[in-house]
Structure formats: structure tokens, C-alpha cells
Image 1: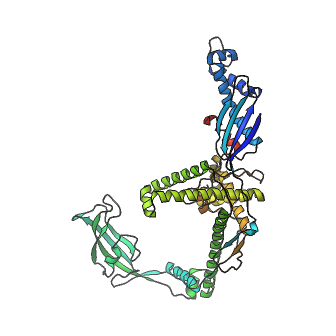
Image 2: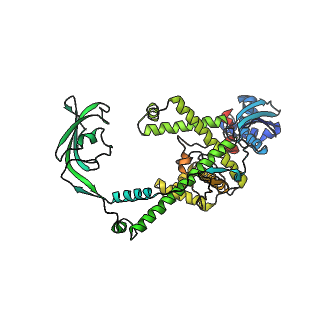
Image 3: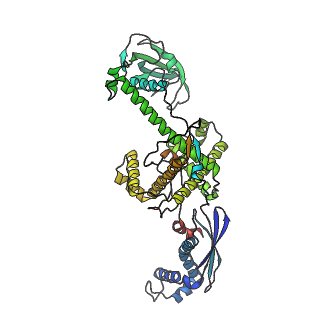
Length: 497
């Protein structure tokens, strides 16, 4: 067999494969054996029909075509390996020459991974917000903690914003009660605005036992959206009593003995939170910088596949919450054209980011060990509410394990870039990021805005394990499902002809 490669574009190649007839003999013999078992001929036992009889019954041309279809996947796979083609899509195969006794010539056009030229890591620079925790922010956190330990005390006065009241509600339209639109003893925080529009304005100033009626639109039921007269009766008023901010409160609400110790801990936790946010900001800006600096062409088939996956996931999510695409776009304030353009742009960035990080993985020989893999399986199993062994079995049934490995590898690549890049704050002061020892994949990134279907994954077999490429949730530019590698793609050759 002879294979030659022709580059059609930075993301597509054409393989021309020449196969002598003798090399087709194993496939031809296998075809005769298969047909001998399937074809019933009087005087011959199943499986014992001679080839010449099959030629007479079925035609030599039919048998040759069957043999070629049998041989094509393996021949294509061997050609891919011989020419070291990094396949990203199923091939478009065309048989250009074949005759009984003559050579087989076929071509296969396929999308391939583009070459990525990485910049010097030390040349990368990103600007992040400085870690600043103000006294006001500390007091705000202490105030939230006091609120958690507040007690409700009955009061004999009119309703005020911030009170907690017990309400009886009923509604009517056109003078007739609306079935199912009533409630008794409903607890409500006045001013929260999370129950019925107009309720807060109606009951502020009402006394215990007093009823107020107002007009509003119904939110649920058969008459949802229609105007109705709602009557709210106050059945009890309580106000929130906050504990004093002192050492006793510190002892009650925490493991600390003094308010100063509690305040110092709150400040420390806020600083840690800001540093974590700083790392996330640095990751995001570093990816943006790489996308601006590195030219990465995206195969059209991958882009369309990614867009289709995102649209499919969005449709599924909208169906789950009982709405449609038009309503969703209305809540976003976007036209269909604007939304589609945004999805296309985001999908393209996701694929380009994957290509860049995969290039870093290859360049730096980044791998993943068994301990890292098990950590991720256990962590995600806990989030899913499953036992680790059950979760691992689910991963193994599909391509989830490869997706997880690719996610970890890309995250490690991104953190490697951060370790080598120059990170400064808004005033140009160097910032030392607090990076985790073993960075975990960011599910928000793996998810992306609308889907997260990774077609850019490829083998990292030289790096301890094989890496494919969403994730169960995932993420924005880094993420999730393995593309067909050369052998996987070859499985679809016979179906594509």
C-alpha cells in the first residue's frame, strides 16, 4: 500500500491511497467465507458454497465491492498512521480506480488539527485586580452573620418593611373567586418582593388582622397573566432582632472567643476569596491574550458541530424549564440573529482555546497520574451525589473518562502558562498568584455558555495516559468530549462511502 498526503488548507488534508490487488486478498477471502454462510445453494451445505458458484449467483463485481467495503476502514487507518495525520472528523472517501485484478485507488479528505505556533510563555502578561479588603466589606460580612442569628419577636404595630408577617391570601376575577389562588398562614418577609407584585406596597402600614386589596397579574394557573383582585390579610407581625456585635456574639456564632478574633478571621476569609477570584480572572485574561496572539484556524465541520451541540443542549434546558427559544431570547433582550452570532463566536473561541492548550500539553509533555484522576472522579462523584465506584462505571461506559482526563490536562496546561506569565495589578505591581498544588478543572469553563462539546481532543498517549477531550457540566473555553482519533474515524469509512 502507498499513501500520499496533500494539504488542502491549514485544517484539511487529502490522502491518496494505492493498494495492489494482492493486498485485498484477505478481505476478498473473508467476503467469500461470509457469503458462503449466508447464501443458500441447493447441493451445498451452509458455509461450503465455492467462490465460483457465488460469482455465478451474485456476480463477481458485487463480491469485489463488498470486499473493498470490508477493507477500506483498515486501509484508511493504516494510511492515517503512515502519514501521521491528526484526524478530527470522519473522512469523505472516494474510490477513483478499481478493477478486478487491478489496484485499488481511493482518496480520503478529512479535517485535521491545525499547527499552533505558541508564543514564549515568559512574554505573556495579564492584569488582574489587586486583593483589597475594606473595613466596610468586613462589617458587611459580620452583618450577614448577625442576620443569620437574628430572632423574630412579635410586635404590636403596623407592618413595616423588613418585618416578617403571616398572611392569608385570596384572589378573584370579575367578582368570582379563583380556584387554587388562596393560601393561609403564609410566612413572608415584607420588602423581599419575591411573592406577588404589589403586595409590599399594599400591606405596609396594615395592622394585625387588617385586610388590603390590590390589583395584580396572576403568575400561575389557568389564568396566569390575567389581572385579578388579590386580598391580603395580616395575621401576625414580627420584627427581626439582631444580636449585639460583641464577644458573646463571637462565641455563639463561631469558634472564636472575641469579636476581634472573629473580625480577623472574616478579613482573612475575604482575602482568600479575593485571591481565588484573582486566579480565575488571571485564567480568563490569559486565555483572551492567547486568542488574540495565536492564529488558530477552525475547521468548518468542527465549528458547525459545536454550534449544533450547543443549540441541542439549550433546547433541552429550555424544555426542562418549560419555555421556548423565543421567550428565552426575549429575556436576554437579543434577536435571533444576535444570539446566533454570539453562539458562533463563543463556539469558535472554545475550539481555538482547546487547540492552544492541547499544543501546550504536547510541547511540555504534560501528563496525568492515577492519583490525580482518582481525585477528580471522587470530587465529581460527590457533587453528583453518587458513590465513586458507581460514578467511575458511568464514565467508563462512554467517553466520559477521556473527557475528564482531557479536562484535567488542559487545566494543568493553563496553570503552567500562569506560572510562567507575568501577572500585575492595575498599577503594574507584580502579583504572586496563589495557585493550587493540583488545579481542578473548572466546570464553569467546561460547560461554556450554552453547551460545551469538545471536538478538539486528541491522544496524549506519550504523556502517561491517553487523553481525549465536556465534561459533565462544562466549562467556557476548556472542556469536554473526545473527537474521533484516526482509528475511531476509520470505523465510519464504510458508512460514508
